[in-house]
Amino acid sequence: MLAAGASAAGARVAGASVAGGPVAARASAQATRTGGSGGSASGTGGSASGTGGSAVRTVSGRVIPVPAAVRPGGGAYRITADSHVVVAGGDARARRVAEYAAGLLRPATGYALPVETGRGAGAGAETGTDGTATGAATATGAGRGARRAQGIVLTLLTGDRPLGDEGYRLRTGPRSVVIAARTAAGLFHGVQTLRQLLPAAIESRTAVAHAAWIVPDADITDMPRYAYRGMMLDLARHFLTVAQVERYIDELARYKFDVLHLHLTDDQGWRIAIASWPRLASYGGSIEVGGGPGGYWTQADYREVVRYAADRFLTVVPEIDGPGHTNAALASYAGLNCDGVAPPLYTGTKVGFSSLCVGLERTYDFESDVLREVAALTPGPYLHIGGDEAHATSRADYVTFVDRVQRIAGSYGKKVIGWHQIDAAHPVPGALAQYWGTGGDQAQVVAAARAGTGVIMSPANKAYLDMKYTPATVPGLTWAGTVEVRDSYDWDPATYLTGMPAGAVHGVEAALWTETLATTPQLEYMTFPRLPGIAEIGWSPAATHDWAAYRVRLAAQAPRWTAAGIDYYRSPQVDWP
Image 1 (tube, rainbow, N blue to C red):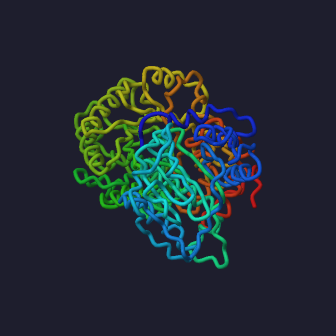
Image 2 (cartoon, rainbow, N blue to C red):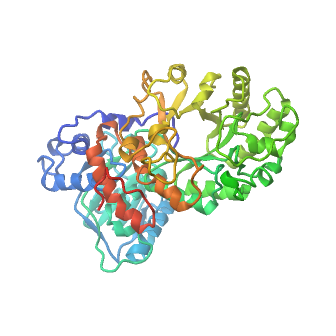
Image 3 (cartoon, rainbow, N blue to C red):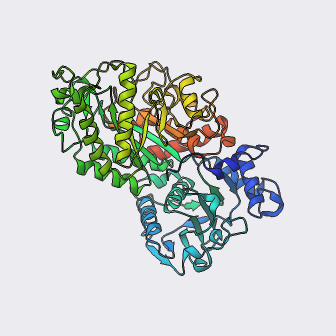
């Protein structure tokens, strides 16, 4: 899920001609690659019109992120009371995705949608000479062993290397809609596309009478541009409950994100229990911005969030910030301060005033204990060590701290992510620097990238979702400017920083800081409608990037958000229904 770098298959699709519109171009390229007659986007050698044009228009008008390639399928499929969800071959991983899919579709349809095992093994699916699934995408089943399967069919492939670890094929026909992938993650992403192909009322949590649950004609081949597609959620400034975060995870899964970055510690609160340093949570977690009661997660709470995210194919990246943003820790343990005096708890919003005592060996005992416990709770490959706005730390001390903490994290088998200021130290091999600046020229980051440090792009004036949409927006901040919907969509991670070497950008991450946000409606209002744009930037081929086409797809999401009870900002840049 988190292999470094961009998807080779996504890059290959992105290089196709854009004549006739980006999605149509992808459809034409895919038709050629998979044996379509004459390389056209229709099933009979015609241009992207008629049946073929309809398939392209349907997907390009509904689905976010826009798929890499679309062409005609075998006809539309209607979900009825007789429909089943079929797992070709009975693979346990695929069955879990099938159960999830059925759980999504049952409330609105009111149908039983039993999950069943199809005949034969989905792993025996046919593949073409180029490795592309052929038998797996037939209108009536998935692979040789599942040709008789009808309904919503999920199958895992042994071939089809171009799909990578997260790609999928989705093909409709009159008796089935087939989702085929090499991994369960790919099947899961395919289910999210199926969800968006259905009418918006599918998001209702109660049965919708007299609805026609039609999956329109389409043959989709899709895979991500970047392997790292993240969202940072700040629990430190305002405490968020497990239930709030799990609701947010469901919203990320909808748009094919695969990383949840949790900002767990800061000046205003420490949000995870550490057994070896218990006052961090019990005392340091007893506050939040504005003087509220705060709160913290037990380690069982954290495990539950990690499990919930993993079930939706998101990897959790925990952040333990340092050497700055540490007042909650310093207030909890006087011995972490150079003078041995604990400062008072802090409930304001200023930054840059706190620092761990870099010359004190106890600091590294503290870091080792905390990172050891968090690493043991976190199955993913990364720990985020923070590293930004350390204004109260000298440059020499900053380098000493970052270099040593990187080694500590590595000793527990984890790779390091840090805010891009860690490039001032000596990033270890495999480290990622997360860029959050607002300018297009950042020489230190580019130099580190040229030396081999990977980059995650999170420019604050594009990807920080706590920035106000307009000066009149309530809540939000404006230190990075205002960020309207088009601002958050119209940029390219690969070229945002001048001089960035090819392949250095490993992915994108949106961020939602909570200085002014405490409730779920506030979180969702600032998240939507900007989050889907970041999702599309991270997933879809660069050549499909088109604001005019995107805003149509974005408008189509609004009834889905309404049906799901999600609040959102009605930007004047979008023609909402």
